[in-house]
Amino acid sequence: MPRGRPRQEPKLVRRIIHGKDIWFIQWHDEATGETRRRSTGLEDHGPAYLKFEEWKAQQEAAGKPVGAIDRPRHPDEITIAEVLTFYVAGHSSDIASPERIGYASKHLLAWWTDARVSAISPVMCRQYRDARLKQPHPKTHKLPTLGTITRELAVLRAAVIWCENNKKLIKGQAPFVEVPGKQPGKDRWLTRGEAARLLWAARKEPKARLHLPLFVLLGLYSGARAGAILSLKWLQVDLVRGTIDFNEPGRPRTNKRRAKIQIPAPLKLALRRVQRRTNSPDVINYLGTPIKQIKHAFAQACTRAGLTDVTPHTLRHTCGTWLAQRGVPLWEIAGWLGHSLAETTELYAHHHPDHLANARTALDRRERTGTQP
Image (cartoon, rainbow, N blue to C red; front, side, top):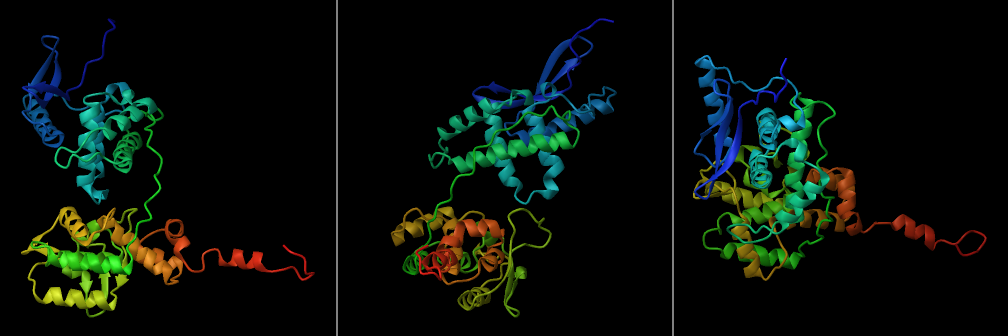
């Protein structure tokens, strides 16, 4: 029996046409023995993959089956683009923020292009990291942080592991995706005076004065992440019982736990005032339209207030720091922020007035014999 290359399954490949990266459907024509390609006319992988699936369905209907391989594949047989697509399609119901996965996939595919999974190695992951660190954002021209690149490579690692566990990759053959180590977080928090200046500046922003102050108050008093605040609906706010459940109905529980909290009095007052004047189901809205991003308006308010190195996440860190400074037990801070106790201890224990107090007291004491310790 003649030995040759195994029949290549249809796949999506990228080609540069007139300066644009276009996805093509590529397959092996058994009648002529040639490799053929057909343009999808699309630059984005997601829509191109849907068109690829439509094409395969048409081929099946015409009696020309070209379905995907239904067996676990060797890393040489499957592309990184396919692995990411399988991961998103099969894991979509468990992903709380699919747009973040899409953002990461876009940058991963721009660098890896149509490379196969076997191309992944620690050296290549470091090359990706170094290349991304030099790649400015097309609009803001800011360079990505190492944390951003870590999240992107973490998506690739999760996709490879998911495909191995779901029989898309041969067990034990999946390559190791090296992810940069966890970076130390910034211990930047606002003093009471800085918080007051930020609120004053938020009220002075022409287009944001009706929603930005409430966003700041929610961040300072609830410690919720920006995404949880922006997606907050009024049905999650119970002003009668005085509670907010930041995990919206139907949203899957993830590692980024969203807490249910009692509403502090100043925040309750602000929420009641806003609720009386709005008909929108979204707590943070602009003329009834939900707000997806608030970084620009927030940055302008920080500039007006004379604050540097402050982001929306600083509000969350400020809330945790204030709670620790007032002596709230760490396990309660963990519950309020939706952290694990270990994470809370790492971030806020040094702000607590009783931090290492027992150790200091033990060393302050003299032995009963009168000798120094």
